[in-house]
Length: 394
Image (tube, rainbow, N blue to C red):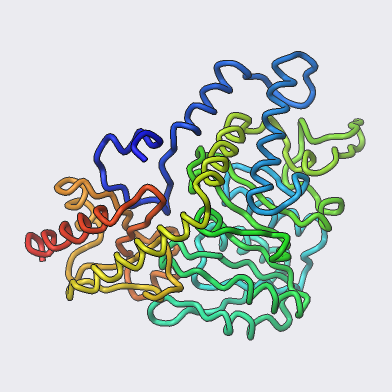
């Protein structure tokens, strides 16, 4: 693994993967190679470099689409999950799919990126409805299903960035289809850790980010089921996505190009594809296995500490993320000591989920999150550090 990930040479116990993952050499070199040898704008140039760049960009789309079981035309490149959710929320309004009086169903488990874009639609007469979690921050899929009556669209996380709960999306989507409810899944944490096949799930929309799955920052994707492609209005308009333009009116290019106004992050797409290649070769079944093993081990070790409070399911529903607090010690102090004294990197704060923090009755939590290059040694170092934090500060 050391030869694949240059960051490992720094001997840092990196447990902040839910915020962003590290990059393998394959991704770094793919981006560097594009800029060294193929850099040009895409689609309209007829010179060699432009045609090479266009081919690399569209090959990247094919590869990322394949990763989630989508058709290339259903895969829109964006700047990340936040961008994708803003895109789909505004496009559904612009297209008349969402109208005054419609209800959108959300949960208190959601990241701000899967809350704020929908909140902005209230000025169009859209109502928001919420499914609450329990005192430990656990969401019941049955509660979600029970709340679907009269709902036009459900937007739900597939895997919580706070508690690590893997929501049973299959169960939720199946119920939504029977009730005629559209479904958008925030896959920012789900897609990097779990094999997702949109063709089997029959999803309407799925958003995810490259940087949470070994790829570059500023790069993401939005899956749009092909039945919406023709009638869905683009969120951004301008150069690169047009058919014919006059001073009075314009037509758009065919999907997915019509949804990608302006010069895209071409190198980012190339890096995204390289990250997907790495995950294909590594095997998502191995990613899931490592996640399960490390999460289970972390929960086991943290339960040994009677001064630690755990959040989330703390069972087989939880994967890749463990949130906790140390009794009597602010999360920021915990993280500072872990970093400076033990070279353990965790995330602290509200994790862009303030409503969930208020539901849990805390200002923030400590969060350790794992990926394929982590080991039990990282967990052991975390636990060792927490014991010392308690001795020194508690």
